[in-house]
Amino acid sequence: MLKLGKIKGFTLAEALMALVIIAIISALCIPVLRRDNFRVQIETGAKKGYQTLESSLDKAIAFNMGKMPTNVIPDMLNQINLAKSCQVLGSSAPVSDCFSVSGVTDITAGFATLDGITFGVKTGATNEFYVDANGLEDPNVLGIDVFRFDLKQVTEDGDTYYKFFPDSSSLGDKRENAENLVKNGWKITAW
Image (cartoon, rainbow, N blue to C red; front, side):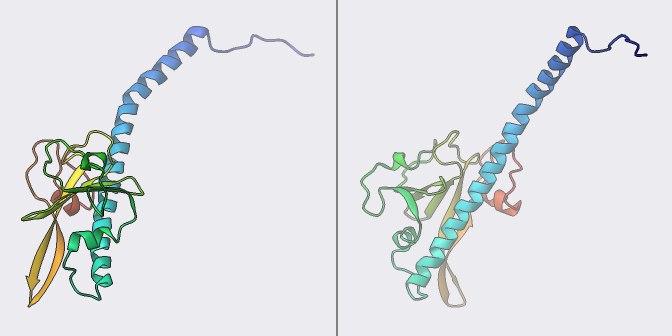
């Protein structure tokens, strides 16, 4: 014979309390997860941008039969698969369409690669290359998502060549310069 017993379960108040606890835990975790996701995106984009610059320099030298090109920057840019170029390679688009960073002025050329990384170039006494790891998306601030690499001519043992050097300028609290980023194995430690 089958006996019917009392069925046990959760009351509505208990179920609502469990949902409130889950909502509070989620509210605490989501900002941390977003920050960590942004950090990984920036670290990856900065490394890919630097590798793009290094690779284009190597290809420009190889294209010139192993000799240093006379027009290093245009020859480098010819080696990159560009999604968009501004004030470079015959483009008449304003630089701000490709590269815009607060506090960085006198950019002579800008371009974007197919993977969404944007670059700004400032030519002159030093050839400064700025890598915006997440493209035109905010915050576009040097030391947060933008990193500077200087292209310098180096002479060693009678050989002259060009090399990229990460910028070591002090950028202030909660900002990472390119030199520290490279030294730390492309891991952001400032924020």
